[in-house]
Image (tube, rainbow, N blue to C red; front, side, top):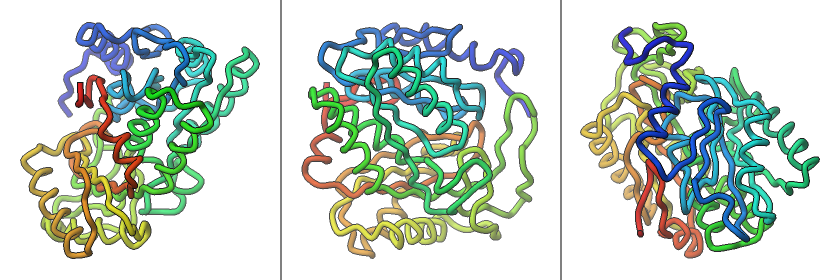
Length: 330
């Protein structure tokens, strides 16, 4: 595989240096692997901290900024960040109003964020946590007990981030994050396998002419493999899997997400099919976001995430946000 890197051992540090150069509104600590909004801590504001293995960009570092995350902790590729990173991030963003950890449901992330919460509280920082577990594809996986955390992480970070920006207290920001997670479901599809810098070749075998339905963002197995399907057929399957579990009675926000190597030409075409299925099922779509947001390095594929919203959540979605990867309203 050809990759635009120097050596695998420095790929995360190199990316962080480049991120710092591109976004002077962020404070990027390359050595300690912490990305913080430069104006943190903001007086009276709850701090939001998230993180996970690198390779899912722009998640999470690309979502640091006003209206979303206060800080992010990038681990090595597909590897959880360590508690020291999380404690350092919490200390950097805590204004005395407390810190909310947003954690994707992967075993390493859960254990390390739990340990970091204990350490931060020992330092006098009040910490709450929201666990994201939106993937309906499988109940348990190679990396999780329970459902995986995937595309709904963006919903939680945006909506809880808007709530914190409004000055809501920690308990309320946490409650909104939990509500968003409970109101969201996702389903992903892989057209090709993912290749990590350290391996330099695909991490699993996905033969030509086949796809995997229900794949995870690290290349974890899904529900089944099938012969290649059309965009229409994939949308029928993926949206049905989400709706059969979510069963929304109110409008939804739709995220049509690329896995990293899927061009927008294909994603917009796939979105047309997703919108068709939702219309046929009588689901009102309040907002739609299309693009590569929760990725898996060079994997070709897509995921569909739906979040059922009321007027308050829709208002928080529309609230201004200014991050490297998501910005509107300013």
